[in-house]
Length: 347
Image (cartoon, rainbow, N blue to C red):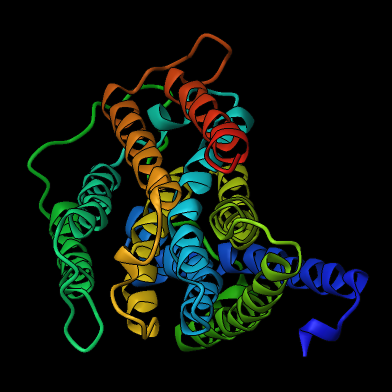
């Protein structure tokens, strides 16, 4: 059906879906912060689990839809490209927080642990690439391993938060995670109602993600574009808009651990796209159906996550241009990767 649509209709539909994702993300930030206080999860874990999963839902639908339609490169690069751009969003949030380096003020052990887990999860697709193309019901064994590692990390994160073996040094710029006082009107809403609203907005974003996947696939075919380029720089950026919105909104609200945890948790959740996409891709192993241009973004994402983790550990108060040195490096690496992808890797 989309093949019959004029170009202006495709672009308008794409923009509408992006707007739906954008504004739904605004509402999700507020709900996630309130649920963090209500449930006692804390901002870092709530950001990593609730907010990370919710804001990544539209991207999940994009990867599943693309893989089911046989667009392996689009499905893979949408997932991994989203991790890279979302990490760059954290550097943008650092620019907006003027009191100190964001990674310094948002010291939280759970975020550091999740970042290390993310590095391990990103290494799994690389291991699949160098292993033989062996599948079980057309699914590579690595795809079974990814959700197991993710689930185990959630349990471990809770343990790290409740019984930490070390604590970050508190400074005058450190923003501690304390539950906020709710207004009378907010207290009247039950926790169950908050969760219901949360999942409604997730569903809306999922529908928008499905539309984006269909439109992106049509544009790839119509204009003979690289699926890796479209996935990493078009659908990934669009479906990652909630992470940008929620991160900036969380920083403005003073929920710094939620902002950092939302990005890292969203990135960790994004690795589950690969399992979902591999299951949906019926022509064999997803990891062997893609090219080096797709794996390029795995390397970029690992490098950016290593730098972010180092920044969370070193906790620089002020960087050379009023943001952390790691934020400067993250932006430089991402921009450089975009240039390489657009000019060098895709001719």
